[in-house]
Length: 80
Image (cartoon, rainbow, N blue to C red; front, side, top):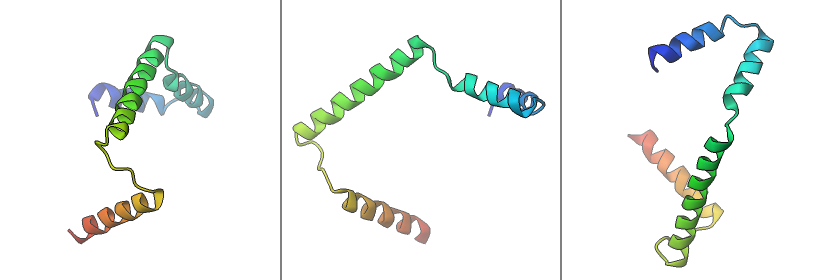
């Protein structure tokens, strides 16, 4: 965390609850140009992933299998 951000957060703590809520909501908003960039990036990612599926570059697994794989990874990490 940068000093600037740390100072900003500390300053924000001095706001009352309503002001903090307004500030939080304002910080979450993305302007149209930023949203357009985000949407374009997601579109590219989706297209790439669809291509990987159609080209057979990735193997699709069921949701059950995905959960089992995740659980196995977590169990292995706990054993380390």
